[in-house]
Amino acid sequence: MKHMNNNSIIIKNLSSNINGCSFLRDVSFGIEKGEILGVIGPNGSGKTTLMETILGYRPKISGEILSSSSDHSCEIFYLPDGVQLFPEHKVHEVVSYFANQFKTNSEETQNFLGRFRLESHLNKKVSELSKGFQKRLGLAVAFMSGKQILFLDEPFDGLDLMQTIDVIKVMKEQIGLHHSIFVSIHQLGDAEKFCDRLLILNEGQILGLGSLSDLKIKFGLHESASLEDIFLSALQKETI
Image (cartoon, rainbow, N blue to C red; front, side, top):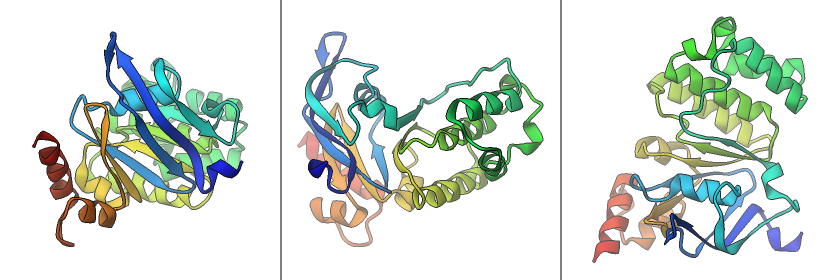
């Protein structure tokens, strides 16, 4: 489709409401093929609402969602924050179920189990896993899905530093193969290290969108400015 250019999906003038009150307001952006796009913002800024509206879990008031498929949700795997996948089943049962659903071959399945260090936990119930390993299991399933675009809501919450580094390595490897990732994240230091572009959201509106360099220029900041500096500058300018 000509209008897609280098984008996996395009959102144009998306608006929605929560309990009858306007929330997302004319949100427009594209998720580019093979990129990690991070969405950052204060608690309650609309990060999860944005993901769920794009996926149709929340009704939109207006706007368009364009993709190469007539049903864009078929191209996306969504991993919500805090989800437990079949908590009373064993890890190997959950993995086998999703491998069958996604027709993931045994070699790929074993690869993701290894990359997320889940091999020694296969006989545990999901509910018995630590929060960090529950996150790892969810991420392994997300990559097993083979979907073109992964929507990951706070995937690093509950992971320690080394676990986070491991997960980022896997994400970077997979991006080079066949995925785009749209990730909400509150750890600005992590977002700065691995996101190709960043979308700053507050109260349902986009305050900035682009690479770190783009955002430094937009907010008139020095080259040495951090993502935290950018984030604070964006929020302060909005309140002026």
